[in-house]
Amino acid sequence: MDEAMSAFCVKAGSVRGGGGNGSTGTKCGRWNPTTEQVKVLTELFRSGLRTPSTDQIQKISTQLSFYGKIESKNVFYWFQNHKARERQKRRRVSIDEKDLFHQEEKISPAKHFAELNRASDPERVIETLQLFPINSFGHDSDQKLRLHVNEFRESAEFFYNIGTEMEHPRLDLRLSFL
Amino acid sequence: MDEAMSAFCVKAGSVRGGGGNGSTGTKCGRWNPTTEQVKVLTELFRSGLRTPSTDQIQKISTQLSFYGKIESKNVFYWFQNHKARERQKRRRVSIDEKDLFHQEEKISPAKHFAELNRASDPERVIETLQLFPINSFGHDSDQKLRLHVNEFRESAEFFYNIGTEMEHPRLDLRLSFL
DNA sequence: TCTGTATGAATGAACG
DNA sequence: CGTTCATTCATACAGA
Image (cartoon, rainbow over all chains, first blue to last red; front, side):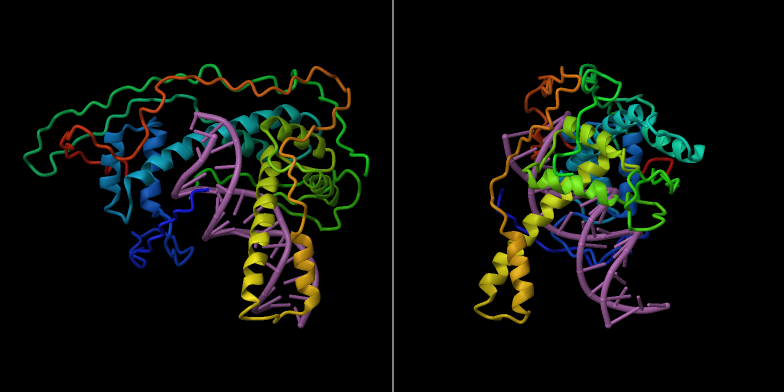
């Protein structure tokens, strides 16, 4: 536990861009992204960006600051978390699906669809994302600014013996006291 | 926020395994554990299980699915919350105790006792709990098997160390699709 | 019906 | 990167 905990409050009132965020008073202490910020970040992620470089983080942060207070580390963490959670979720769901046949489907296909939908995100991960430069200040050097390609692997991983695969692992959860 | 807020449960409202579920028709929208499920989870927790591994979560989830609809993430969240709240409560109590010098019992002694009692669980936390080793289908190697793809060890450690002064090119992140 | 509380779910932050 | 912690949001449910 790092007990440093600076905790600087700031939170410019409720300047929050425009989206909802009606949630709370958004005190302070930790970054609370505006809907616009989330939107952009999500879109970048969906575009394939998973591990932005320091430069990219810097740029993204700068741009997002337009919508509200934000720091580089926020962007950094956002991507770390988003990526990690996408994987974690995928892992868990896929596991559940195998167990589904158990008592599955006596319910509307809608539900099944919903679950599948959530888990079926195209695995296409474009590690390289083109952050289109614009000549915002006229004298922009107009350089293409190609963001280097990160290695994308994701090969070896998951699917470790979930218990020798299938047929009900048949282990007893009915603890003695039940 | 999260665009994928799907999952309309429908909860066939019938399958409930062992009866119980005194709750109700349990519509859905969020997991509503049956009394049996809570019982098992609680017992596991009391046994010392605090942070089940992914494997354990799967197994627990599978077993609990007998009592009703449940997903891995539900188990995951359950332990996460339970642990956090126990900790939170404990902290609260200790704070209150110090507060006693100033406040001195505004609440009935009974209630206070109850809280203290509940929070005073032997700190012994068996982080690793042998999940019912019933010699079911045995070969559950239970190993972590974490493949550490060591690439760049710590290259991307944030800390906005923009390093070599590369003047950040003005590029626009306002994606066209926004 | 309204309100307070318990708890499921989500996520920012950070650790190992 | 996977995991864990802290805090907060959202909702089911009990009591008044």
